[in-house]
Length: 326
Image (cartoon, rainbow, N blue to C red):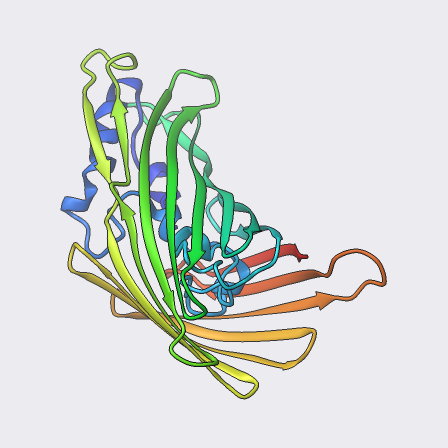
């Protein structure tokens, strides 16, 4: 999620200027380069500790606890029940929380559900004279469900559905603007040989926020804020105690993101990852680790930690996660 708080703070706010501002935010893609001006950032953001250290690769369950949201076929070969929760510590009062759960559906299917909550708090609003007039916040909620099925020991297919909501609100309730929408995606995983996986995913088909501001503003309107759709492919190859991963995400707005990772699992209870992403001509490195906790009773649990560099001036993004597979 790109830093946005300074942008809000620097604007002169008044209730009469809110609508033009919202229109500006919705259509800032016209003026922005890359993906930064398009809505749906929290759905593209690296949101879990494992993927923070894999360059943001999210097409395989080995590289991301949120993989089902980007490639619904990724859980088809996992074969275990799972629960994961995580958070990301970000600057400028931004936040991301994730919760995911998955269950196998014998004999060959699986079902995953989850939630991604993201947004910005404590945005200082100012009136037309420049005086402080309270705090604003924006919140994005993505409710996810995905279904996958193995057609053979080598091929799996998956379908994901998303319910999307976004809300702008003020601490004294003079602003409460909501948008909502629906999206979908499909994915495949193919295992050409032992130790290798090839993934393909179409993401954010028909995803958008639909806004209706007639009940909020005197000159309100209706419009649709569309997410950029993308087609991604990825490849994983096990090489002894290492796994090499590659991913290419190509957006239908002529933007590309390249990712690469090297994962080490030479110790049974420990997995270490290092990766990079290349986007907007900038390299973003990151590292992550998973430690398996052994208990005499109960299912095995794991702790995930991750660090990733942010945009210029943002600092580090810190990730923490906890989960259980059983």
